[in-house]
Length: 633
Image (tube, rainbow, N blue to C red; front, side, top):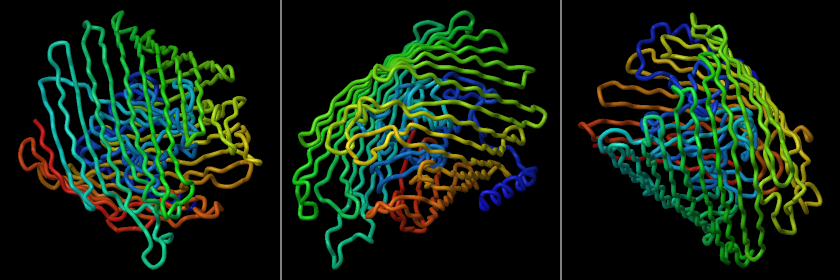
């Protein structure tokens, strides 16, 4: 906490230095946020903690994958088991990796086929995304199961205006290439946005050098390819009704290694397909805004590992994982008056699982129906209060109720916003946890949900007509009934309890028209309450600094500095608790608009060429450099 206190002092002492700030290129936050209240809400009335990364920011900073974006969000920890494409987990405010709801255009894309129901973030690319919203804190009241740590919502940009499009390509060290393009626009009542992106890299070894065989033993590269195709098609039915179809197809192939040794034959093939049809209306002078949606998603994975000299056991692994989801929802936003807004609805979620792991089969299905309601009121123009409740009914364990209460108060004269919230959340057992087969840690149909409750207190200070902002949020969460596999390791049980608390700090300012500065810091203290031990893969101290410079018209540079320290993990060989060494990463970007519609760009990652493991036992990529061109019309 000594480091935490020092950084807080630096941040708040820096505020007076911003009195010379001039107009920035864009506001710190958009005027409205969608995910925090499950409907477009003015930013000054949002009672939760939310970070929005826009399409312009992702393009300017040259983020190609969603996990690269999430690394910049306070309160979020990303752990990738090797290079691009490797298994990637996200932890929000110390919660487990399966304690977050992930949406693409309203469709839940959490994977029903993984053992704990967590999503692998490795394969989502940023092309075609209009923004990513990250809401932190218990959000089950509006989003149901898994929204313990928060909600991550990826939103596609709608087509508008005459036909327009773009294409880009880049080449990096070790021959990593990424190429993508899009076309979007509107014609009469129809609008469209279609994109395609391909990524390929021969990769580099994921096994750390400390495990390489002596005297030049076998070490290989882990190649990866990814094809993302996305679309958003819409038709205006009338002046107050819109029908939209969202689709996304992801096809990947990954060569991977095991902990401590390289395996030449281990490979995973995966296909993901998500579709959602949505009707949006606005009736009664925009006082009633109904939304009806139905979606279907499928995640298929095929893992192969045949015998080799490096890995003779098992003799053969040929595993199939197939998870499917049918989702339907009916949401109503009702403007009761200028001061009161009501949100209510019902959603249905049906999931299926089939696994065949070298002859050992598991299958099962589960359905869940939730009803929710939220009332938000604004008093004296500046005080916003909200209260929400939800009831979920599951076909295996019965019903679960959750609730959330929150407040936000804006002092307009100083642009100071105070916020506070308290809520409960839950996570339903995954299908594998209920029905998984095997001799060790088999599924248990009698499992109950995992529960959480937590609160947050925060303040945000706007400066210079919202062109600069500083904020501080304290959070506290408890987790109970967590599912683990206790001795004798035959079946999963609800046996564990945990707790997390910490602070999130951000500071953004533009002291000159040509300079933007960003700072964020997160302190997280997450422990297993029963054992009084830190939870692994939740760094305690993470902070980042970013500067963006525009010295000339059509030229921009960016530099990012990120420090991760006080980490906790498990030894890759013994499984004992360890504290890996801190690491520092520096990333730089550059862009030059050589003419209208044509831009040259470059970036360098891990400039210091740091050797580090994230998580323990998997080597992160070394220095990389990229150069590319983008053309738009």
